[in-house]
Image 1: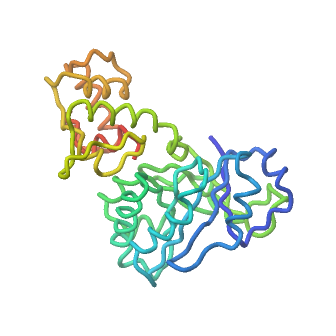
Image 2 (image 1 turned 90 degrees about the vertical axis):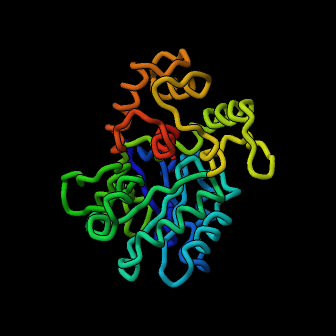
Length: 292
């Protein structure tokens, strides 16, 4: 179990060396809010911590502007940064409650189109419970705030639990500090699977994939919608390198033959990831296999 802090301009770091030498596994920095607000400390904190501790960034979603525009602003702010942690979307504004899922979907779709990454969603436990459908809850990964209790929230696909907003363990940071435990390595998956994705893109191009304009996939290790659309639906009886690729990800013998053992592995994987367990690897199962 790892410990992370999320910081904004309201948190002043008095000793950067103390941050690096602490028990923290990473820092998530506020980057943007709405379409026009940039956190005034984002760049300086990034400059002082880059390459010394794992860094991530988050966007605070607002109702006052287009979620698509907000996704573009967030992407443009962080696209050239060396961030090792999965991006984070913060939704807790009560003004968004009745459109929370609609705004999140629009933001996530646009950000994924631009970056090939799906952000982890941060919110409070009751906000999560009351404002999102079961399907949306199951299709996303969550960072849940639940204060004043030592009981871990009962949330499917929970990556981390923010257990306090007034942590006193880190005296070298002023202001109220949010502190979280991380239970799932998905937070750090952003760069870990790029070689895997590139291997897959190379294979799909070898098999003759082209888009509607006759272009092959860009072999960049970033899985966007085009790469996802190129992936075939496979099931028992399939053979070849795509099956072999799947078998490697599931940890079974990679013989390239989708037989009973591979089908059982798929069924187990689907069940463990709250997917419809039919043994067929379609788009939703591929998303989970590829950690997006």
